[in-house]
Length: 243
Image 1: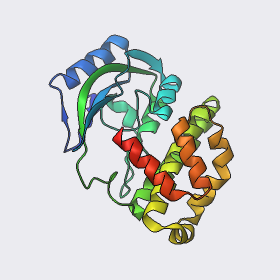
Image 2: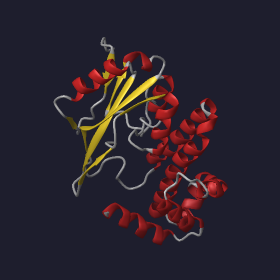
Image 3: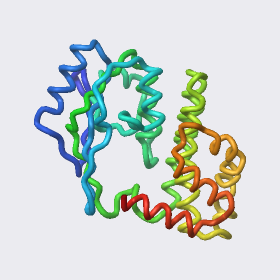
C-alpha cells in the first residue's frame, strides 16, 4: 500500500541511526543501485558487537549473492537495507511462516541489477530473551530449514556457478537445525519426528565437509553430528557463543 519509491523495514524492538535512510538513499542515487545495505550492531542482553561493516562496495546481483550466501557483509535479513519498491512486485513474505526473511529477500536480490554496501553500522538489531531465533526448538523453527532449501534451489537454478556458495549456505542451516533438533528432542524422538531432515543431512555430509566455504569449526560440528556425539556438539556451540 505504500506510495513511495523505496521500502525499508525496521523491526519493532530495533532502532536506527538518525541518518539511516538518508545515507542509504544517497548511496542508491549516487551509484544508480537498486538496493543499499549497511553495517549492523547486534545488541543482546550479554554482549554488543558489529556485523556487516567490513567495507564499501558496489556489485551486481550475482556478486551480491556470493556475499549473501556466505553471510559476509550482506545477510538474509530484511532489515539494514533500503530497496527500490518495484523490486517487490510479485513478491510477498510467506503468510503464517516463521523466518519469512529467509524465504523472501533472496528473490529481491535476484531481481536487482546493482547493490551498494556501506560499512557504517546504521541499524541496531536488539536481541531479546524469548525471540523466535533463541527460544527452545519447536516445529515452527523448521521453517528456516525448508525456506533455506527453497532459496538454494532457486539461486542454483539462476546462477549454477554459485553452487558451492549455495551449498555452504545450506550446510550451515542444516547443521544448525539438526543440532537444535537433537538438543531438544533427544536421539530417539529426533530420528522418528525429523527423520527426513536427518536423512538429508547424512545424504549431503560428504559435499558439506569438503566445501571450502564452510568454516573449519562448523566442519568439526558436522563430524560430531555424523558420529552422534551430540553432547560435544552442544559444548562447542556454547563455547562459540561465549567468544
